Image (cartoon, rainbow, N blue to C red; front, side, top):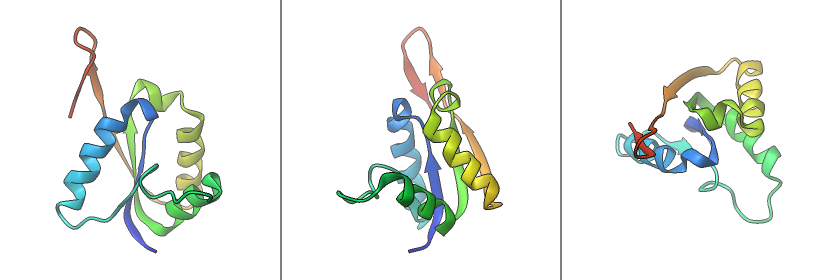
Length: 102
């Protein structure tokens, strides 16, 4: 299955990723993101790589968590090696309230 956008994010930023995914899908942009598109019993890493390959665009939700995430680093390496269009979206956390801004 083809996707328009693969969303890469730290698990700490799932709320932001879900909001971004919902906004894109409201405009008929088909997104792939874990854990939504992962059926049970499937080898996770292979599925992620296949989804990146099947996506037109790689959207990286840039945050403190994603920069240090081994999964996000692996996903970025695949996106680079597959010559995907990579878009970085900066997720900002308000340190006083610990709330995320879009």
